[in-house]
Structures are given as structure tokens and as C-alpha cells.
Length: 306
Ligand code: PY5
Image (cartoon, rainbow, N blue to C red; front, side, top):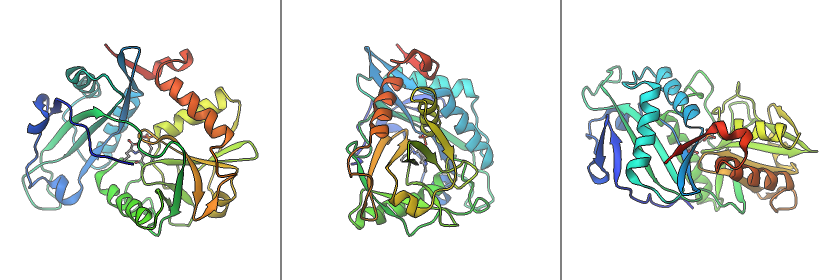
């Protein structure tokens, strides 16, 4: 379902607004050669005549955390980065739901692996719809595994890690599936190629723990809070065996791009009755209300861009 990006007017690049077509990078950039970069994915929802950005501060804090983990000296403060996002949304005068992609990477200079070339930062925002099929996806357990925690930093949203997700997602697509599910080094369920994963079993919501091989997803955190606080559900963080996934009552992905996406099949096993589950559909509906600022309790997560 992922389509080409809808071009907007301006991109924020190294502290300045440049026209979309002028936002260029030198081919010597270390970020291109070695994947030395970090990024974020944020959504903005056009509602009530303006864009509402969801959990902006949390995303930008993770951006800084990712940069710190890989030695990237971010040339901007948290406030400056938050402001850059708000300004780029304003500059493009969006009238649709959008996706915002802050990215920081090492630019041109030395070709050495140990070189610390100057860091470049961009914030790109564009019109965006659904990322995965909201009616449910068919998944394949990937032959590609998540690396152990001492191999690549799993908490950081680093560019280099996305080669793994690319391989997993392409493999799944080539085999006729919509999305991949990666296991960790010990064979437990970790996450999708760009999403965290949840299962529902006997009314309990279960998701892999953050001390495992997963990204600490912001949507994951949102759903854990909403399931507990609004639906009164028990939420458990623990390792999930592959066969527990096959036999779950319901399963779904969470992610900024994927929002809440039902999983209806895994490795040709139908999950539940193959339809969107009851808990999943309740959470999908609640999530849309929350991100569009319709539930006061979670109003603190919204940044209004007027
Ligand atoms: N796990 C991985 C590997 C991810 O890439 C993502 C987000 C998540 C989990 C969910 O994290 P969050 O809920 O904080 O978004 N993926 C990005 C996104 O914007 C990029 C997808 C291509 O959703």
C-alpha cells in the first residue's frame, strides 16, 4: 500500500526552509554509505480546520535519544527541533492528514568508518494516508531475525537498522504476504518491519517487553495506556511464542504510520475468525478519536498548528 510521497512546497534543511526540489544531499554523505543516521515518523491530523500533531515532544525526545546512542551530535536543541516541525507544517499550509519525517545523518567529508563528518538535519512533511491495509494484513514470519541487543542498538531509530526491515518486508511481499513479522534472536515474536505487535488472548492484551529486541513505540505506549485506562483491560508485557501468535484471539500492529492495523493471518493460519477483532476495532476507533483531539483526557498529546 505504500505509495510515492505527495510533494509539498517546503522542507526544513539545516535550519532553513528550502523548496522541496532543492532539498539535496551530497553523494559523499556518510549517512548514505554507512547508514549513519537517525529518524522519526510523526503524524499530523487535519481536523477542525487545522493540523494536530500527535505526541510531537515524545517523538523529538526519542530523536535526540537515538542520536545520542549513535554518537550523532545534534546541532539543535529539543525546543528548536519541535519548532522546526511546527514551522514546516505551517509553511506548507496542509489541508490533509500528514506524515512528518525528521532525519539527521552524517554528511560529506571523510570516507572513513571512524570519521565523524558534520551532521545534517532535515524535517520533511507531506500529505499521507494509510500505510497498511486498515481492513487487516496477512503476515509472514520473516527468515530475517532481529539482531541481539549488543549487535545494533534496538532502542535507537537508526537508519542502518531499516535495511533489515526492508529485507523482511520485501521477502514477505515476494511471498504474497502484506507484511513481515520478525522474531528475536531466541525465536520469540519481536515486531513488524515498522510496527510493534500485540495479541489478545482471553481478554488480556499481550505485547513483547521493551527489554527485548523491539523499538519502544510511541503508539505502543498510547495503546497500553488507552487499553488500561479506557477499556479497563489487563495489559501484560512478556515474550510471545510464535505459536501463541498463530492461536491468538486477535492480533494487531501499532505504529505511527500503521496506526492500529489488524493482523488477520500469520503464515497461512487465520487469526481468530479472520475478521477485525472486537478489542482491535475498539482500539482503532479510540485511537482515531485521540489523535484528532476528541478525548480531553489525552489532549496533552496534541500540538495544534493554527
Ligand atoms: N517498530 C519499528 C521497527 C518501527 O519502525 C516503528 C515505527 C515502530 C515499531 C512503531 O513506533 P511508533 O509507534 O513510535 O511509531 N515506524 C515508523 C513509523 O513512522 C516508520 C515506518 C516505515 O511508523
